[in-house]
Image 1 (cartoon, rainbow, N blue to C red):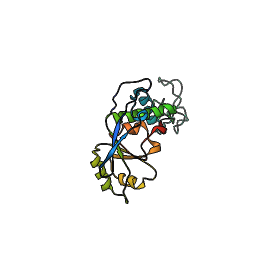
Image 2 (image 1 turned 45 degrees about the horizontal axis):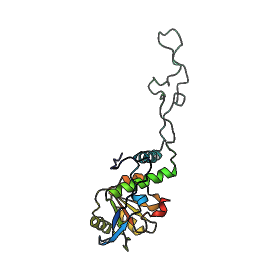
Image 3 (image 1 turned 90 degrees about the vertical axis):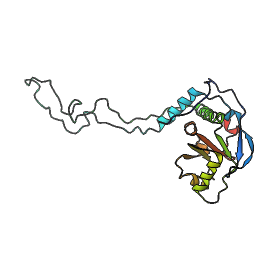
Image 4 (image 1 turned 120 degrees about the horizontal axis):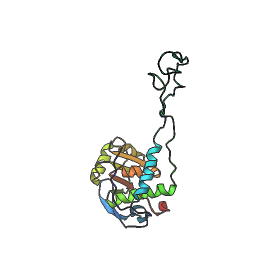
Length: 224
């Protein structure tokens, strides 16, 4: 399981806002000014208990839950009583498919089940904002004006990340129109691209850097 870097005191309710800014750049790394991040999204004190509960539920939902073992009644064979009830000096046995026999059924083994946990939408949103606030507090949120590439090239994506100083795991938040950018980043093993509508707390905390564009940067309307 991945390890996360999370700093900040535990708050029961995220009411503490901080104004943070991010440098806006183009794909070559040229600075285009600064942008003030939405404080209700990027300026919270991370709510660690909510983050833990939401991420645990998200990881649980990924489990297939298809593991299955056979009980004594499902194992083939064993329909005949192996030996007489009395007179052998041994304990009575009803079938050779009992759990204590080789090839027998499994006692209390796993069966198919669902691991999904119900999580309120407000908690999911608070967890996402807490994760983004943590990355903003560490100055690990990057902003590009747009992906001005005509054709997909992995070399262009690497040059952009190097110009931004983004090393380690990078999460690139894209819009549905950023097909060229998605194709440029997809061959990089340390980069995960995600649609802006699917952004979640787990992927944010699992990345060292989060890259937004002008189009995908979360604003005040997403906090309501």
